[in-house]
Amino acid sequence: MKIAVIGCGWLGLPLAKRLLDQGHEVHGSTTQDSRLTLLSDSGIHGFVYDGLVQSQLPEIVKACDVAIINFPPSRSADYAAQMKDVIDQFSQQTKIIFTSSTGVYQDLDGLCTEMSSIIATHPVFLAEEAARHSGRKHTILRLAGLISEDRNPVKYLAGKQNTDGQKVVNLVHREDVIAAIISILNQHVWDETFNVCFPEHPTRADYYIFQAEKRQLSLPTFTFSEGSGKEIESTKLIQRLNFTFNNPI
Image 1 (tube, rainbow, N blue to C red):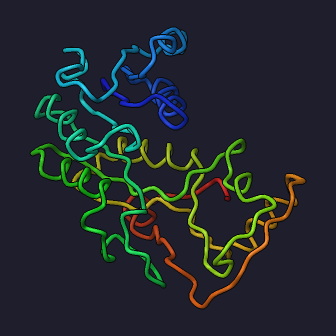
Image 2: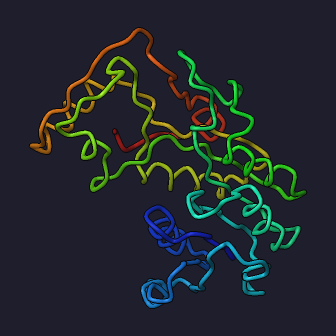
């Protein structure tokens, strides 16, 4: 297939490379001219797109079979409008994968499925709605906190006083996110919404103290309140796609 990856950054670039390995033709966006050579050297047809100016997508990109939109909300004052603009530029036949966030759920204790209460005004949820109402086949992935070997939030917590040590963590490795996207493409699963979160949930205190010791960082300290917080459940993804998480957090 011809696949557009809108946002070839920390997640998008390794995803694009994996799609190339799968035999797809990949067009990838960057916000910086200086990164075009990096994309080209990887075999990706790169183009500059900042998401803020209408009709900026190249014509060949607009006709891609699939568009994977991985563009962070931090660069836009109106993320939903930004997403609607980029989606509307694609052909009606283009299928959309939108990387959303489990942050759209209300912060309530207990298991959190795709049917749990949403923050209806959350900008990322409103961006999801742009995909749902676009008239195109689409799948939305609500990603938990993203980690990799070289990226873990413990480095921001090391040596600091933190609250809610009793609450559980909701994390997923970048490699499992990439695997989930490839599973959706290979199995042609559309018009669905999935949580993507590793199915183990240690407490924040246990997890971050362990990670700090592993990295020889100053130990964070925690206070404890009642309640475990929300626990993101990925049962639907596991059952619908016969998916296995292979990268422990």
